[in-house]
Image (cartoon, rainbow, N blue to C red; front, side, top):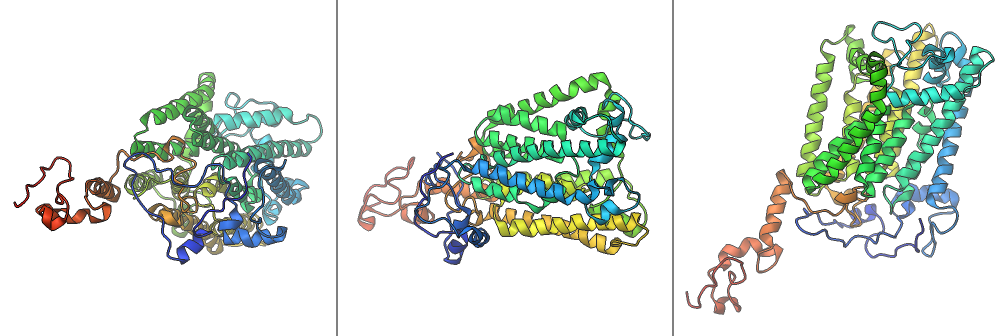
Length: 553
């Protein structure tokens, strides 16, 4: 994408300066045609212009771009630069796994935890039968349990694993094959990361450089090759990019494919539902829903027909799983010494309450929230209430965090909490499996879990504040509406509740005021005035549907 020279618009240069100067963007409910007074769509936002942390970091490369800088006109357009950045981050993450690659994965005890380089990938090559040429969902896994006799991953992830197994060279020792399996998966997951970062850069067309948050995320380096979550992350990111370009059917297709790789992307249909409800865009929501259902069925039905029990293992395993590492529930379990009965009921109730609260926020906020904001909140609610939180789950939230709150300070605060949690869980597992010679015990591990919970809640709180105070939103402060909203961007509201409904009614009444929106409350006092008193035709003369009062009455 090409860009003209930096926009030399008037007003405060950064949101932080605007807030400090008492500048507040107007908060209003759209009741008619969208107001297109925001920035021109062909201008590109430079993070160093509005983010103090980005400005300080740019000093490493010579400082922020100058006033006459031409951005995005060379071969190094944002997408290519971001792809290179994410490749470098992925390579650093692979290098961090070297102690395990060289032997930690294959040694008894805790070396893979002590070096914080654990990965499921090499272990599952043998443990799920790929080394023996078994096929997922059809053949039973070696040494399975009554609750898990087949591969316990969604279908599209199982296909991804199978393709990597086919690409793994035969021959050699079992350790060498597992090493090759991890390397091939790491390369494929790197490709997924590239797809994700390019999709993020094209979701907010005016803000492609926000995707650098994803490309340089510390947790992307640490956690991208623990499991296969990046496949679903990439598909979900493409879905958001399609929706932002008003391709509702295609967006739904990629949501369905992402849900076939991991369960969490289906939650994105919830924000789409309430936002389309508020804007009256039922046709587009129906297209997205239909595309998602069709794509999910296309992937899943063949496996259902081949072996329903194998297909259902992911869902039955998730249902029967007890409270596990990383969750709030495991703290209760370890403190009480016993598990919680009816845990699934508690989790479902909490998630439903969170979803209802987010839905109310979407329909009652003074200004319709952005899709990425609600997407982050609902996925974060799922993460915070779930019975398990593996370190790689943070990857689900990173693209949504980048789009919802593109500010380095808040992003790095959250990432720091997640990095400490990742190190904490490996240290705790090293303590448990290594004869308590290395690592941390329950108390410090609970502290690490609390850091993860508080960091995610902090980012949720900041996003909710941005929804309620749009002038604090880094995306909206310059007059933009919802760059990732597609058909929702600039659309008028049709159905609102709460304070949004009150503001809409006031705006409707104000349209009939003779003195403008600011004076409509004085209409009753002015209705009885005469021509002589008012100097014009009387306050009620211009009100539609009211008779013009005769002079002298």
